[in-house]
Amino acid sequence: MKISCQDTLVPGVKFEQKYQTLKDWGFDGVELSGDLLMENFKEIKSALDSTGLQASTICSGFRGWLVADETEDRKLAVKDIKCLLEYAAELGAVGLITPSIYGTSDYLPFPTRKRTKEEDKKILIEALQEIGEYAEKLGVLLLLEPLLRYQTHLVNSLADGLEIIEAVGSRGVKLMADFFHMQMEEKEIDASLIKAKEQLAHIHLSDSNRLLPGQGHTDFKGSLAVLKAVGYNNYLAFEAIPPGNPQEVADALAYIRLVLQD
Ligand code: LER
Ligand code: MN
Image 1 (cartoon, rainbow, N blue to C red):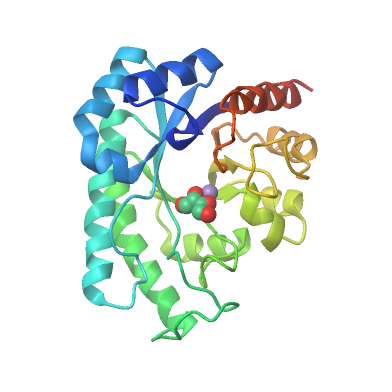
Image 2: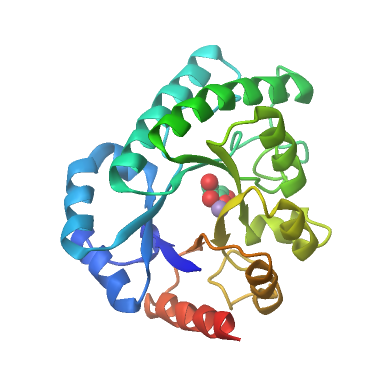
């Protein structure tokens, strides 16, 4: 398994400086923030080329949401997502990560949704069918990310994600898993990973408290052994609250490499 790290976790002003640090720490790749990429594609591409660091994936960064209330915001999301998928193809990245929508919840006093969950699901599936076809042509993936219930009302568990992906039926749309979200939404993380194995194309390594892997109470030893056993061979990308001392990122990488050796 290759290991990458979100660009927000590494210090540095220039992209080149950040990517070189990730390389020096021993990461195989970088997960790019989509919003930075939208603004700085040329600079980012040239920094990747000069450092030789691989772009593993792109994380969000588009305007609107696939199940936003307003049609215009949904169209904007599809338009930007297609652009980010093109960037993914140009950079040789696996694809683009997106949740269904961020900032909605059935469990907090967010504004009432205009539509039922079933209506939202239909909208999501149709949008992903269009995007999936585009992604297939480009040879990249749209990675659907389930988020915990306080961040989204739609697609919280891996099973929720699988239901959508099966309905979409495109090779261009796959599932990803984030250990932070799974600690709340899965009954048994390892059993859910096994069920999702055919569709699982990316993973966010984050501990139970959104700190770096090894700084919470997630059983990475057990779950990474399960992923190994089912033949998961895609990226594990670090996502976490940036630590006080950046050296902690390198220490967390050493910890995960050790766990993977067992
Ligand atoms: C948000 O909580 C998250 O996990 C990110 O990966 C957003 O896509
Ligand atoms: Mn995540």
